[in-house]
Image (cartoon, rainbow, N blue to C red):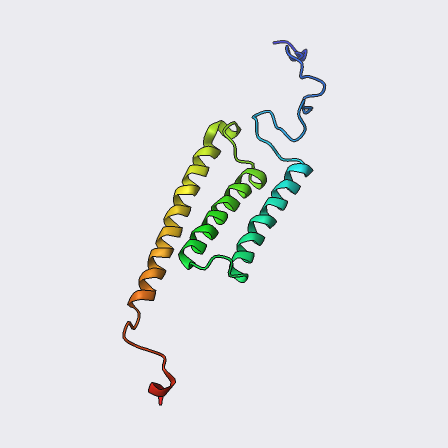
Length: 138
């Protein structure tokens, strides 16, 4: 049995943690840059302000169209958050983040359509013959 230590046969690169692209890890996962975070923030503010203006300014007379436009802005904002803040893309983690994105979209569609369905039926079925006339209250 030999008492001498054996040196490793391979040597690690001197700058193992340096990457040619800032903010990108070796597996393709992006950590984002200041510019991407500011872009995501600006888009989030815009996608919040426009629906607020649509409702408060009563810009669209039909409430159903207003609701659909606001839902579209909500879906766009979810996508902005997933791309700019959660850094979901097809390259990172072997495509699992794309599967998570698809699952998120399915859950959002189910939640939004279910919520609208419940609110519509509650509105039409709750006390259909009851009126809030002050003369009937006394």
